[in-house]
Image: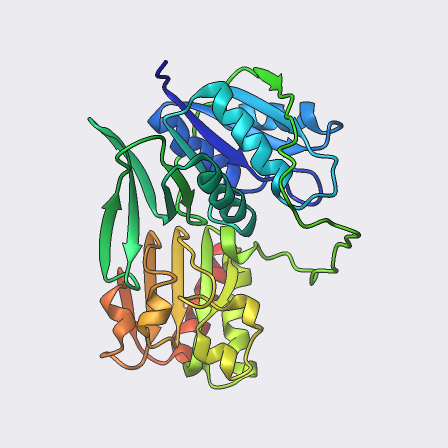
Length: 324
């Protein structure tokens, strides 16, 4: 029997909360049909997590317990069980390491088509359509499946629509083990992440990035100052990373992190195609570069031709004055 359900796999962070991507995923799902959330986690946190998902727009929450030491396979088993329970029009998850791994395995197991790294999902008179930014952002393309429910991963930060809160309707799934081969976790340890008040690059609404035009690691501090003034994450071009100005974890681009924040400010970045592939789906792009022919201006909504070491300090002064 056909349904209007959209099954959404929500990720749980190591500290036991829903990942930041959850709100956007449920917002997209609610715009397509009836959002059904699947949460795979501990039994102790089930009630709290289901309430959080309902507040973000889940019309129904399916809960699956994962207390095994098997890696990923229990989540795929839960996806199969949830899929059979709600018979959805589509399956959606974040294009994160977890989301990609689970949905790829699930699609293979169920014989369904998978659309990865979508920048939007819509519905037409024939069904669900995924939209992609392809060939380094040169083309915008669409894809749809000819049979079954599409399995879709959404790029981080791309979904900014939010759904209305729903009453909590939760159901515990009894998930039989598939018995499939799986890696086994012998031990785990949470690494000490650098202490910072800045948002995570992958899900940030605002990102300030710097390039080789900043000249040195000391010059790159200008990026950090502006990021702190705007409550933004710090990004970088590959050239800045290769030059040692900043850690590789901050690299934005085809071989780095692909993001779609509400605001992206590029300081001293020329705009190589590999960099643009990772940021040009941002909602508003501002570029500051002294080279008026820099390719970054081709994708910028606003451009300032000038020396970053002149322009940015004046911007910082203006921001400070506005706050005083």
